[in-house]
Structure formats: C-alpha cells, structure tokens
Length: 151
Ligand SMILES: CC(C)(COP(=O)(O)OP(=O)(O)OC[C@H]1O[C@@H](n2cnc3c(N)ncnc32)[C@H](O)[C@@H]1OP(=O)(O)O)[C@@H](O)C(=O)NCCC(=O)NCCS
Image (tube, rainbow, N blue to C red; front, side, top):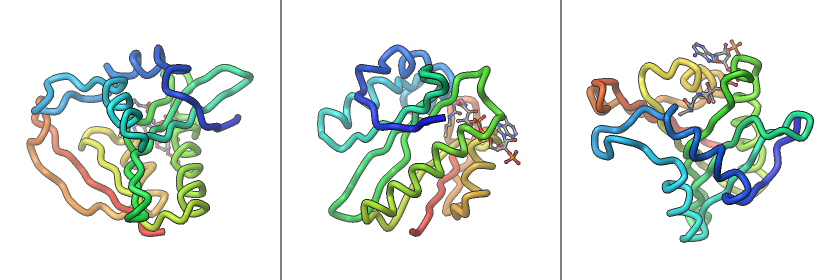
C-alpha cells in the first residue's frame, strides 16, 4: 500500500464518484466533493493524498490547510467499497497525522455525521476528541459530529 500526494485532476473521476457516499447536508442538498476540492485548490490550500494498491488508486483523503494558524481540516476522505473494512481508511488518517506533525501543524479538525460509524471509529481510535454535536443538522435528520486532535 502506498499513500502519496496527487493532483486533483488525476483523480477527478474517483472524487466525482465518491460524492454519492457523502450524506447531503441540509444546506446544500447534495454534496459535491469535486467542487469542494476545486474551491480550495483555487485558493491553493488544498492538499490531496491517494492510496494505491498494486498501482490502483483505491481511495483519497483531502486536507484544507491553514498554515499560518498551524491548523488543518480533513475534508472528504474515501475508500472504494470493495476495499473497506481492511484498515485503509484508518491508514490514510494516520498518514495525515504524521504529515501534519512533520509540517508543524498543531491542530487537526474534521467532522462527520452520526451514522458514519466507520469514520467515527477511526477518529476515536486515533485519539481525536469529539468537540461538538449538532443534532438534526443533516437533510435526513442525522447529526453532525465535530472532532479535533491536538498534535
Ligand atoms: C469512512 C471510510 C473512509 C472508512 O474506510 P475503511 O477503509 O472502511 O475503514 P477501516 O477499515 O480503516 O476501519 C477502521 C475501523 O472502523 C470500523 N468500521 C469501518 N467501517 C465501519 C462501519 N461501516 N460500521 C462500523 N464500523 C466500521 C472497522 O471495523 C475498523 O475498526 P477496527 O479497527 O476495530 O477493526 C469508508 O467507509 C468510506 O469511504 N466511506 C464512504 C465515504 C465516507 O463516509 N467518508 C468519510 C466521511 S467523514
């Protein structure tokens, strides 16, 4: 397994395809992961890593950087369905933690939704603290859950 930095347009199809796995927020109705990444790429604060197995890209994780404040936010992260439950999702977040420390970041924030047991488990087991829950924040009535890790 390899995790390496990648340019947004090299994995456009994967990012576009991943959008349907992100629960829509109430505000947007539909979450477009590619537009999200493009917006921050245009501001030059997007960092994108892909996970590869035998030269096949099976997932990605996106970061929104705020280096002046030593802060980064984990944006969309994704593992292809057939590769889930094998530890790759957690490996991507572990990679980000190591990368953040090496690059002098002090805080990582992220959010997920209540029913996303996979990502909640990943953040909990990597010692992220749950800082906030906003109930009924999603179009289907689910909550938003906020996590923070101090490095
Ligand atoms: C969330 C996601 C990236 C997790 O990737 P993954 O490779 O399946 O996760 P891992 O295999 O590393 O799982 C980590 C832990 O969570 C558990 N887990 C994973 N998916 C789970 C699920 N759906 N329900 C319950 N537990 C789950 C695993 O059993 C594992 O626990 P363990 O360490 O005790 O064995 C992946 O499911 C995905 O791409 N989902 C769709 C997009 C998404 O939801 N992205 C995250 C938005 S915040």
